Length: 251
Ligand SMILES: Nc1ncnc2c1ncn2[C@@H]1O[C@H](COP(=O)(O)OP(=O)(O)OP(=O)(O)O)[C@@H](O)[C@H]1O
Ligand SMILES: [Mg+2]
Image 1: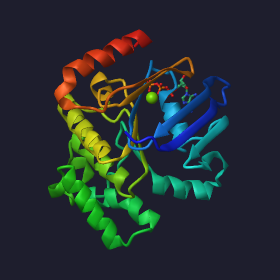
Image 2: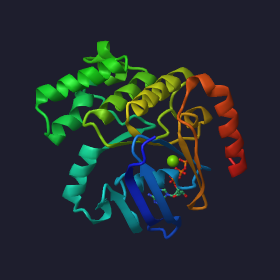
Image 3: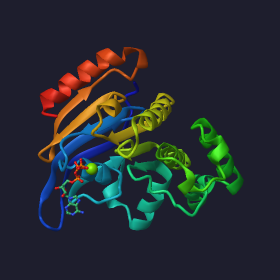
Image 4: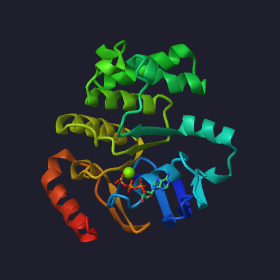
């Protein structure tokens, strides 16, 4: 595991307009090429934390520093370019554009960023789709795909601009167990190739992929534990280890 810091969260607090304090004084550092999982009870603030780290939402106070740049100080325009270039997202509900084809969905963020030619973007999209087992589906309509296939399209889309960091909020939450494992296998493979990932999940199977688990409770990081990188041949031992720790956390 490399120790290069990619994101530093400093004293981050989030309060919504209705005045409820959701996150309080969060300090957190994410390292390059790691796979961090965020767990915790429903309503604990996991999605809020992910949205605030990933620039989808603005913290009430505190800083999010990405490679020495304070993201909370960027203008809306700079922030939206930053987001498009450096950040990938995957959501539980896929968030694909139904009236575009698979290939068009994957290419869209690449066309919007405009740092590569259309031809280069299309080639990268095709390569990503092939790697995700969707090479034969490039021209298909989104609504003809299964949930697992849709989520793999969403992974391809999230990776089109080679983001430094990939955020996922319950990416297997809407999938059956087999499709969920396919999606997790793809995320694991990307992580093994160096992709930094931060994923929120309720699912123990998904959590096993992490090399670090943060447990969020009462607006704070209640637990922060490092695990060895995922190894499919050690699944049983890992499951016991992760489960025991989560139960200790009150999961
Ligand atoms: N836009 C919003 N405005 C006001 N309150 C919000 C908003 N979004 C979330 N909350 C509140 O913040 C708290 C944390 O929500 P969040 O979605 O981060 O929880 P979570 O840990 O992701 O839960 P789950 O596991 O159910 O997805 C909840 O009490 C929620 O009602
Ligand atoms: Mg959530």
